[in-house]
Length: 72
Image (cartoon, rainbow, N blue to C red; front, side):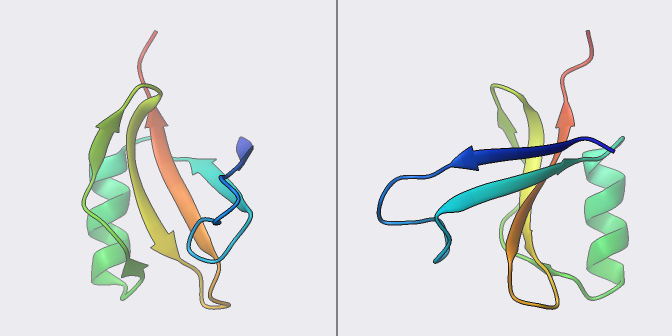
């Protein structure tokens, strides 16, 4: 498992001063499976410079980023 952590602007990120992220093999498959399981998804999948990504909220209320890095 790869875990990334980025600082965010002073106004915060969904009330957090950091943005944690986890790598998924397939962003579309993870999004569909988590949506089916009732995970609170905060946005649609989008393309970013580092790969395909979306945000979700954990049961504890933390916001995490799931991302699929670009293939090398």
